Image (cartoon, rainbow, N blue to C red; front, side, top):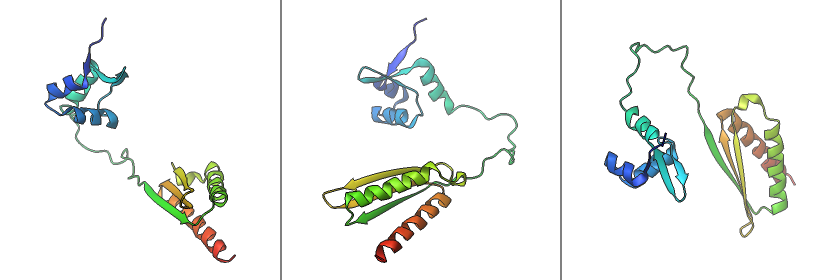
Length: 152
């Protein structure tokens, strides 16, 4: 059985939307698509699933069971920039943070850490994502680093 695929432009015409809107839906995961060559292709099934998702009707039981609802999850981000930082010291701090994250407290939940060093301006940037508890703990660590650097 041969599967039918549509191009982004064809879907845009069918839905009376701009092709860039369809591309955004693909990036956001609202429409499932495959890249074939240089073009995104949307299968007929994926198109039907997307087009009908707005029409889905909730089950007859409209009551919400509060026991099954997940608690609100909060993700916090922080960017820490340290200026006048040589690359060795910035790498040492980054390696220490990586070691800490590899043995992190499970209560911190999902975390993410990115590190960027700008040698031309001698600036280190530490980018953190996670729960408020995680960000708070890491900020405390940076406070200790700052305090120990000032005592030197």
